[in-house]
Length: 256
Ligand code: BTN
Image: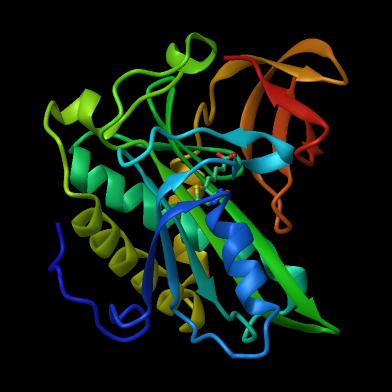
């Protein structure tokens, strides 16, 4: 793990821990809409998040006090809004690298930004962007990682993992959050300093099921294809008999 002290963006002065909140993303967006400006690097962490949100309108469930549920404020005005996928890549790479170092086991990124160990999801990211005209004003980066929870509802249990299930020990959530924020900061600074190509290479190499033949659901129809990469705008590329088709998130689903 990296050292415990914050520096630069996430210097620890702007970590707000809330006992109980519907959703840290919603809370941070509400705060942003108020007149007092928030500093880039502000972190909203919840002990209990009772109406957590996932991608595509799904719910994110987390047992109170057991997991990481937090949101970070970034201000990526250095990026053209048409490059929104680059932030997804930078944050996904940070999480995957942090998880691999913590767990000492391979972690893959299920497109676009779920964290997987084997065929089980251990964490997810919900990035909500706030644009002002052509300027990318802010990004609320919500991160959920299953840490000390070991029992999950039957509906998701078979496809869900936690840090404790892998390391067989409880972890301190504040320490983990601090360490993870350092990875996010490093990746975000890398994005600012022009290392996106390397980040995209890492992201692509770590894609869940890259280069493997698997079934997908396309318009509700089950078809076999080989996941081959992503386009510049973040569409998923799948080869069907050497004919490549790209999809957005509403157009294709993995069969797991
Ligand atoms: C997903 O896998 O679909 C994304 C999950 C993101 C969950 C986190 S928990 C903290 C933040 N607040 C939310 O309501 N969602 C994100």
